[in-house]
Length: 113
Length: 111
Image 1 (tube, rainbow over the protein chains, first blue to last red):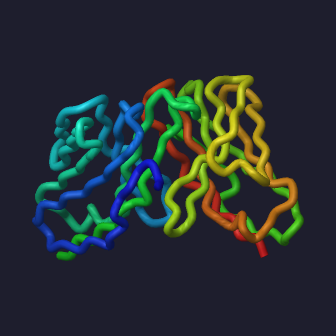
Image 2: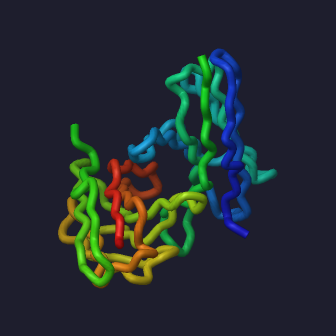
Image 3: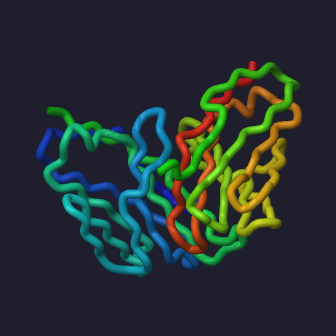
């Protein structure tokens, strides 16, 4: 079993919809949780960063971490066509690979006008 | 405002050829990483360097070597390329326990 599980989609929503993206994980050592956005033929770009449990909001984006359930979420409000991309969850903690990131496989999102 | 710079952006090799992928960062980060990204597999860690002068294996190190040349530069070498190494390679850097910043990747095809 991979340490981080993420539904690859694809997920297609109409413009203006609320999008919910999720990941589950198995390693209790993870303390740092991130969401990256990756456009086609580009590198991952950091979207949200959360330490330990709780919520964090940045504009239209909200990240939630529930360490008791080993579950993280990213919500996108008022989705736009420019949000169409692959969203990668990532997490790290003090493990055998230092603070190297463990990634989900990514969810492909398409927002249609 | 360069961030993480990877060269080359594209490369085609024949089986058995060698090649070095270059990565440089200008953010004064201590840690640097090499990943490969394959369809359906996500990003997998090849090697990392927690600080200048140290390197360690990640999840998929076989067939690769790395050199942390100085604080800014971290190179990845394929000594004898194989078709299974066809992939997109990403370099990243970070301060310790902070989010990683990625380059735009090197697309490598091995025939």
